[in-house]
Image (cartoon, rainbow, N blue to C red; front, side, top):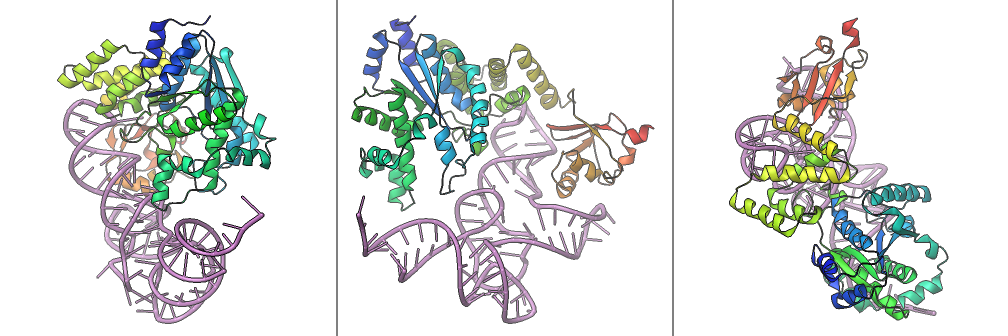
Length: 405
RNA sequence: GCAGGGAUGGGUGAGUGGUUAAUACCACCAGACUGUAAAUCUGGCGCCCGGAAGGGCUACGUAGGUUCGAAUCCUACUCCCUGCACCA
């Protein structure tokens, strides 16, 4: 049953949305009582969903919960083509089986948040595999270069004499065409997608459809606190990562991000958010405590309460108390290849090279049972159950069979 | 096709014949401190041998060349960018 309760709609459109195009029309359509088709596309070249993506997905879920239809577009066609110029590392050319595998990974994560049974999944190749040159030219004929140069990114590069590939003009058109095919009523995207979503509106109008409404979601800053969260910038927290990592990475965000993360990633209400901001301002609650609660909340969302508890325990134990965690990987010494202490570090994958091992040992970073290890240590002296650690995150437990025999 | 500019370590980007494994910044790693894998400060940040001192190897688009010695000079090639020309 479709929920057209005004307060509910106000709540959905009013929280955590950067921009709605056009808000008035969207409200009218939501009040009409007709289920709307909510389009959301994804690129299978980057199959892992991170916290930045969940901002939009949560909103999508809210719409789904009041009875609207989610339409997920698998961008398999564009992923297969990739970026033929080879310039964009984030757009590699993928084979069909890679795309399929990635898509499955994505869907798996997607349905952690979105209700699978109420989702329509469409593969782009369905309509693009038979698309011919005439179709493409017809598509391009609807738009002018001037329209495309309106996009900030294009305008900037054009003015600075930076290259813009023709294909870059094609991608928004393809995305727009997706909207026409699935008869999208609303398209979701980050604020960086604004131009592309607007092209969709225009194209639908040319094709005699009612133009889609665009819901622009804020871009979540990454753990570095400055750039948007992105896997390629290595400042992301993936929702399928190990609970300990989700917890730890969350603890590593700068204090200035606490409030943003609470508001975008949790179900927190306005009052509680105010009180968090308040305590941050006045220093009444320790920022670390707020971060712990946040980290706990996030792990609970993607796993469960128990995992969150144990992730927190792990963090407090290893990072705060600098104690040895449980369940450390065991490394069995092989006397043939583990001739020196540096060999053990490399062979156990604790370090990447002998040189790195030396450096770390010289910096007093490598500990054996909590005591600094020296370069002259002999592997033969190691006992089974000895613990070697580097920093707060690299641990191995020694199994020295040879010795015990 | 013509003219000009460019290609340097994960990224940006210095460096025009030797003290350059290559400035700086970012990212990353470690240490100290702490309130956390925050912030700050310090150190490190190609590979191999060595306890160290030191040595060796590989690296500045590709292939050659000049030179005692080249990221730096020369030749050819590849790729990229900009402008012009061409343009159904």
